[in-house]
Amino acid sequence: MIEFDFGAVLAEWPLLLRGLAWTVGLTAVAVPLGLLIATLGAWARACGSTALRRLVGVYVELLRNTPFIVQLFFIFFGLPSMGVKLSPELASLIAMTLNLGAYGTEILRAGIQATPRGQWEAAQSLALGPVQTFTRVVLPPAFQRVWPAMTGQIIIVMLGSAVCGQISTEELSYAANLIQSRNFRAFEAFIMATAIYLALSMLTRRLLRWVGARFLFGSAPVAPRRPTVPEPLTGRSHG
Image (cartoon, rainbow, N blue to C red):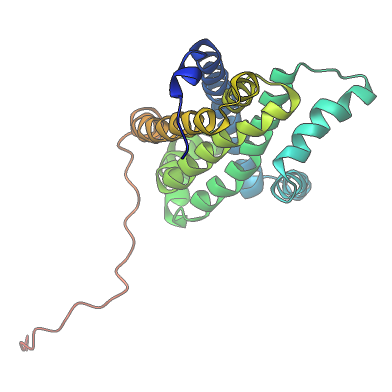
């Protein structure tokens, strides 16, 4: 019969709180930076020159087709051989930002490609420049289209921060592992970490839903799609 002792885990609440703070802090900084990279990358993939599109394509494919932990190890253990030594926290932040930027580029590019050609032409007829057309006409509805997928990707990156404990970043999973090594209550420690991750993911999803509607695309309308199913005939003669 297993006897649970959550008191031994809760007694280490400063460690859990510190780990939670690092997880939230890393995510809070990585998300805006990653979205900035995603926006620039999506613009380059959709509107840039051939050379720029290929360069961004290499970045996207490289990050999307390699494990996150390998990217993290490359930044933390590989860069010092080139003379670039980073702290575990900074290496984690860079890895999370680059990872979100790569996936976000493709997600946002899909939203941009779904923009009707008429909106581009309408903006040009109003004498808007390329930058104004992209930032005011194309980008807000594109964000609105892909925001649910982008929210999911942000949460994946936040949960992926658990890997950063492998290089001694003091995030939440690192704290849970440290607690179980002290009191040997591994089951309780990781149940507690799981509950915190679950609550954090749900709160983050609700927060991103509000932030997206409030600051990114607001009430920007998405161009309605033409109906693909013909309306039923009434059978009345109009002659």
